[in-house]
Length: 498
Image (cartoon, rainbow, N blue to C red; front, side, top):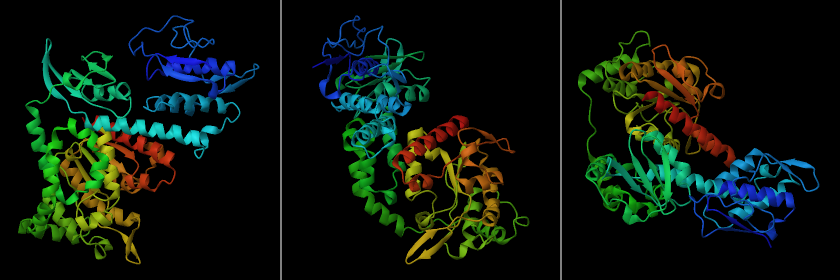
């Protein structure tokens, strides 16, 4: 029975070379044993040609030919390996499961007789491989979200060091994200598998480390804890969702984790205090101006001069009939000089009740995508094209209805005021209704997403999906692809706004 010894746990090139040779030799999957050479590591040079499985399979050889889109079928006839398989294999091989090499070779073997196999998501092997890829993607996302750097010093001066224990072997694949985000900061990320180091010029890797090699704390942690406690909103606390997004296995490396039990324990009392407290009322002058402007026709009202006037005016707005069935108007929120402004469609059911934008299910997707893209929501302005919830009753449920062009045009007066006062560098239109409000005309998401568009007021715009669109997609693969595209669009917007 052939034994293939790969150079290290993520030796994708070695696996491709061995799989190619085995497939050409007609060696069936159940006859192959895949293992990792215990004497080799990620940084060892490849073994000389001829050292491998003992059956003509050369693994890690410098002259080995990697798996190409075209492989030879036994007997001379060729067959093609679809690109989705190669991409999927590159992700799945980072999984910690010991069966990953065998699973991927089994898929490769079956592709010869069933070229359409990768499109059959109900197939057990295909589903298993996609499950591995999703786990790897999730591990990379958690690494981006939960790495915490601590300030240290070495012979060259200040360096930021983080200790992290990824669920899967994603450190090297995720390292470029940190280089892009912290390009001007020397840093090291230490993990049990491999360590990556950025010296402002090049990214390097060294063998895995021990937790004792990382600094335990630094002076910045007190500031971070204070900030975390200040932005913690007890009214939005969902413990199960929080633990799902921030699993306990990561808590020991998060400075703010020490605050979480106390914040959870105090959440109910703090929420009750917030409910009992009287709402802050805007000044009488602000309310009078807002009421007057909100009832005037768009061309007659005096333009608001502050975000406070806009917030008061939105709640009193009578420019269209949507106010009749809504609980309240929902103004935008964020810092008054935000560089990045997000425009959604309209408040949903939960937003209508809370009086804040993007706090419901779509808001949770939005927040998760912002975190994945490295965009701090607290530094952006988030609003909607239409400020009142348009819906119809079905039993006891309020079902969303899309605002029409007249309602969007009536409410654009408030959006234009927000844009004029905030003066953002970049505006992101989330969905078709937002595109209509931002550009004043129908704007195709398919034809325009993924690139910067110029607006007349010198701001740039990015068009992308609305988070609720991602929730509605029934196919998990399509949902994952659309989510990735959404995150990339958010990254683009944040880069343009910098």
